[in-house]
Length: 252
Length: 252
Image (tube, rainbow over all chains, first blue to last red):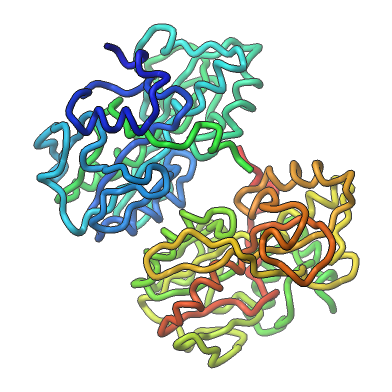
């Protein structure tokens, strides 16, 4: 079975399958039309700085849910789910180094941990495709290309770092349509932050003018730069599949 | 002089005038086209709950800026300004009771205080007027009518409470236009949360179907319900005049 075979399965069923250890691969393509989230789990003493950082950098850090300290249930976007078991694979960080990539983090859970789910640009790709805009990395069955830019996030407390972007090449005549399509979804990174010459945002190694969206890897990059004593994230591509539909995050 | 006489004056000059004690009246009408903010100042130990509350209730609680603990400068929306002196009048709360309504709060300032500026629906009224949509309370030179609804905010930590709304009667044929105009500004409450029968959201004492927007009084109501040992807010109508233009908060 591959991810696309679960396109029509409900988020609840997919999470149950993951919780039972029956799926440890990337999630893009599963539960089509439902939002998937980046995961960051932090001790409460870093959680305040992280919330302020997200508030100051809403394009790369759109927060979908914050759990109560010690409680792994994301009550807003997936009542009954468990952030310590319902992602296919995790990264456990100690002092900024990955010490484990397990399929659940039950044995690492602590009473002071707060879980953050952050929006992911995969959530607006359905809107692009529906509008007849090709998405190359989907066509090529690859992960979306990501780049570190020279744009700095607004710091907050201990956290700072560059904005990370995802890139999608879009035919020139469809660029305005792509901007409008994605601009409706600020909770999952919204409109591009840059169109055109990659060098203008400090990206030297690609040649063509393209569209760049703020990426949910930005907050992880900022946290890792601090090398906190303890932290858990998802393994890239192994996202949390939440209940709301992508369209629920259209702005109103 | 009345507020409208300062419509074309810069936010920096108006804040300086307020800081020097030369203006202690309401701010609507001053610095036309620039955002004005609701103020909440809390001890750091309540600030985390407040941030999570705002994240869970973005329609009534759009945060524009969060200051560093102990530092009254809102660096994002007004570098050089001082939240302890630059509003015309404050309310100082002890155990849920107003103990003072001073024109500055320098003598109350503490090293653990965090200032929050929250968006205000006045910021989208320019867009309504520009679109040819009449705004009755401006025509009548009165404050916007506000009502407590039976819609509950999503709680966070110690904070919970009902959504407070502001109401604007809009001619029926202009309702879709009013929804679209304000929907572009989620950072200042965005589109209405209810159109039509007030009784459906628990408002019994007005008769006509109208448009209701989530209101920046909601977070203050939630905080006051907790009766925190110490808290400072603006006096209603006596807002913080920030540097950004209303249009800077159009979604993208």
